[in-house]
Image (tube, rainbow, N blue to C red):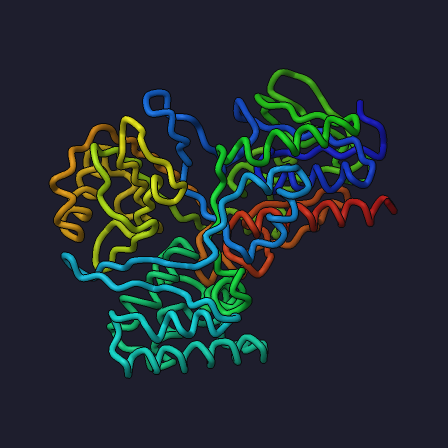
Length: 453
């Protein structure tokens, strides 16, 4: 049994490990339990045995506005393993060979983004001015706490702001899909405006794309585990929680693992997706309206296709496709300035909100991605595909639809010593790494306040 001041955390992704580090820093002994063979949750990377390249399970992107995440990485000693692309530059294709670039200027924010929008050639001058006015209205809505945003979808919002089809398809919608991982017709306008304010219309540094130079798992799991273990805690993989067990006064007394062990503590944090949480809740808690609503939270899938070619396909680091199934292309060789490998062209393709195709075969998904690539960048047909890897995350994130956003819980639960963390917890942000870390910090702070630490 653990001592009364200790905490059991279920889940060793960004949320669980950030909560564990925050509690360890306050002197708590923490046990972090992870059902998978290694920490990392849904945010992990692995080395491809043939090429030696680091493969991200879902092509995660950090941004300069991820302040809680960057602070967490600094605490675990890995912030220097990040590559910062300070000048946002994305090439957008709207048909074969028809490209325009969103490129921020070296001006103080938000003028850097205003300059990028005014130079975006997929829009006419009039459309650019209209989009700029719409952005200013959005920021004003945010400042005033405009309640109507909670009732609107992204599509509703941009239509209300008078944005035409061209502006929606080539500017507003690509941003929405990339940041919210779902279709604009169902995604929350409130979440969208929060993202725009933090990422694109704040400081210039906030819009920087940030990538780990090491595997995503290595970036945070090792350092976080060391901090937790140095204070007498542990991070244990392959520890599958079967049930939370109630004790006196309706509080959680222990977790029962599949191998028969029990771990007791005075406080417990579940840092797992809601569908996993519902499996091990005490039987009498599942019917509680607070927990029962978790079954109504929708999820949204992501498909990521990694492809290696015999030559570079594009000089751009980041590419967007408009009017195609494939939405984004990440040029790994350019992003990390890596050259001379046996597979010179390493690209990652991302399809967000991929409900319609996630059940397609890997061969079909690869065919779709290559067809989109060849249509948008005809010269890519000259490149020979050497290797491909298709990864599906069917429940990658909580869906950002209006109902799911309203159902998101806070940190506390009806059980006095049981708390929640995860990217799906209500933080005002979509289900991102930043949301996960914020939720972990909040859970740790709530536990410490309850104990008086």
